[in-house]
Length: 90
Image 1 (cartoon, rainbow, N blue to C red):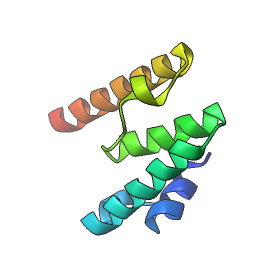
Image 2 (image 1 turned 30 degrees about the vertical axis):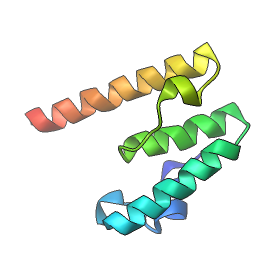
Image 3 (image 1 turned 30 degrees about the horizontal axis):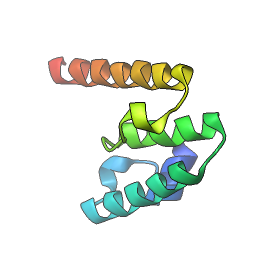
Image 4 (image 1 turned 180 degrees about the vertical axis):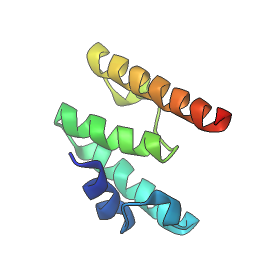
């Protein structure tokens, strides 16, 4: 899945910083619904990752049943935290 396409689909823009709080809340609700009904592992991970980027991801332990997917989610979340720490330091 293409991140810019996902952002545009859910937010109407490819720059989440330009979305207001109501748009972000509505987008998060729509993503959560799509995540709940999606069955393909790669697409589920992409939707979860998008929610993580937006700071609103559900718990990976309950979202992903498989150990591989949970590990990937933990690794992705760790990378996001490192990126945020670098932004804060820079």
